[in-house]
Length: 429
Image (cartoon, rainbow, N blue to C red; front, side, top):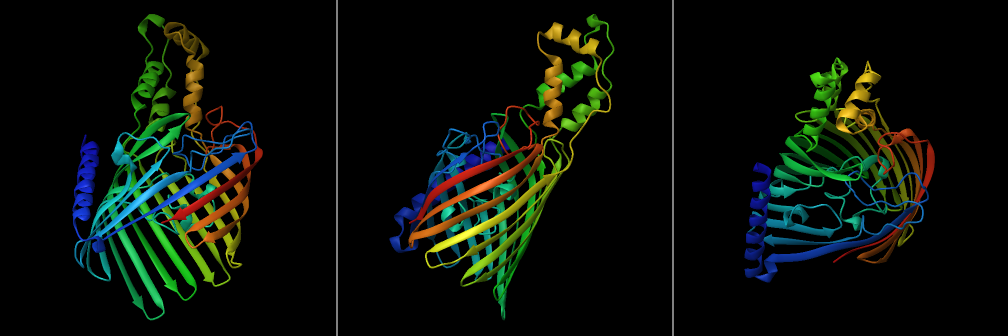
């Protein structure tokens, strides 16, 4: 209920500030926007490509996916006075939403007492992306979509809370830092079902240093999972295995308690740490990022991911190459198995395949992200505000490591090499 009221409050703040902005002098209000028309195709019949784990859209052999990344967004910046301003951003795209407030990606009241400090209150992006606060502005990056092996596991797009930023130049060095705290509701698509992952007690900080042609950045975010909506059904299933109906006359499975504890995600913590470096010259740049996701739940696997990208500038044409990889730790395996007699008796009593249900739960505790990729592509700036991009990603997906993809089974897949062709048109206005 608290999260719902917070969304309503943000929506009220958004429309009040937007109305205030429209009745003020036009010179104090700036309206801008951005958009993308993006399509992609993967040549696999077994694995369907999706750009991140929040997406319910995917592309596989014989399909050209256009709904996942195509969007249009609008941003309003209104300056009340030299210290106070309001920023709002609305994005219209194919995504799971509860109400209009989910399409509001940014809605902040900003206070800047001087050029060095900035305080934002409301809904904002947590600066998880190196190039831009948000992944939605495709024009801000050279690739058609954020590096899959690195960013697909990070579905967080906004936080409701407060952000404090500081920046200052010291000779040739420029320092920028920020810290934020708040809550977030993240949509994640799990085996075809869109579920909300509420994150509470979220805290994060970033520090970036620019020196000459070099940029160094470090980031850290920590949050607590507030649980999935399916916890109760799994808990009931595990309790039935542990203490079957007396009429069956069979002992329960001792491993059911351990299974339930492994499946719990409510009130478990996760943290994400990242390091980034960029060397930027007039004729091109090198960029690399390394990230580590650590969790207390087997439902969200621990991972290490990284990539290196080189982009060369030839006038309006910018060809690029990206080498990337992600790897996760092993999941949960029960130390014992329930007796075949218990599984058969419960299946007959419930008219369901209990063994299959148990296998699905165990598989969900063993989802892995195991793949590495080579991506070649280019960006062509057709005009100052329009860019055409194309790329092909060759992904080596390891056995039972296709957790970033849609697949027929929860956690099992053969090793496969998949080619993903993507083209897009991005613009700003």
